[in-house]
Length: 390
Image 1 (cartoon, rainbow, N blue to C red):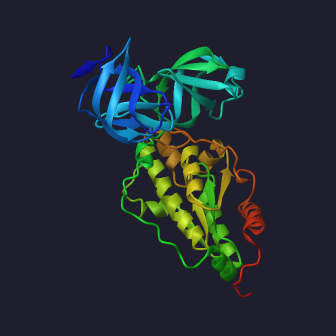
Image 2: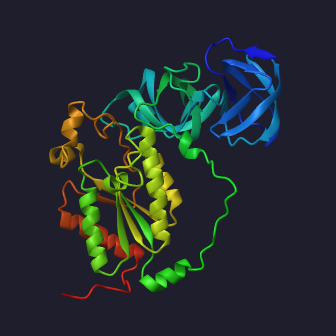
Image 3: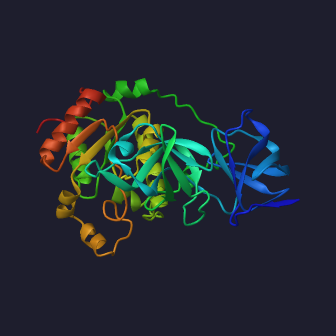
């Protein structure tokens, strides 16, 4: 038994949240492609799989499915075959048919409607100097499954709603942003956590301070590595257990197999976030110095750690480009480096960092002092093993 949608292309069935979870029976809209009984299908963004045991075509494009196993969907989903899947993301670009006004862009009541599913969104770092916006970057309240417009217009189109009223339509584009599917897919099975006999309190008593992650984020050339290394030296001399995880150093080893595509950038930060969290649980202050351009990735690193402190190393693009310590901006301007943050790839400003250090105006010494004061206030100022005075 086979059913074919009016639209050609890969299989896409748009499912709204079922009322009875988990369930063997679902109904939705057949958006595109072809479905057969016995097909193994994937539910995005939940990454669950099932086999279609039966289906029934209803009025219009509606279709009712019976599955071989129950699925539990946390929200709206797209069904696809496993060999041609949609993108999973919580951030994407929208090219608008009708420009939005400044007030509309800044509103807290924006929604995107994709295949009849409504998603709460907010505009990322809108340019407040513009009166109208023809293209916007939006962040969704949760990870969603979509397609790029150029790949599949039916699931790559959206309507923009304000207070429930349509104000524009647009085309979804993922330029510069990562498909988060691989980051959200857990493949490990038959694993059991091992509990440590050395407690967090034992480590605090031994070292005289708590462990945690100081996550330095900012543009290339903003001074992250310089600040991290100077800070490590100062803290070590004061008796803190501290270690720097630097972007270039990590890419020489642990992440040597990763490039600079949006997906590889995200995986780079995912790995570093987990490593930093391990250092912090061992009682160290782990200082990470990474551009980490995507807010989603920084939030994932925050979730991995028990004690996470985002430090925005703030310097304007012009300042960073004038410094250009590695000559990377010059190469990016010539087109010799693709996907370079700040030039041809996006950098999402931290929304609520625990600390901002204006390295565009502060000296290295002043910047280090600002972070030292923060560490003293938040990690404990009486480490057990201060270095001997010389």
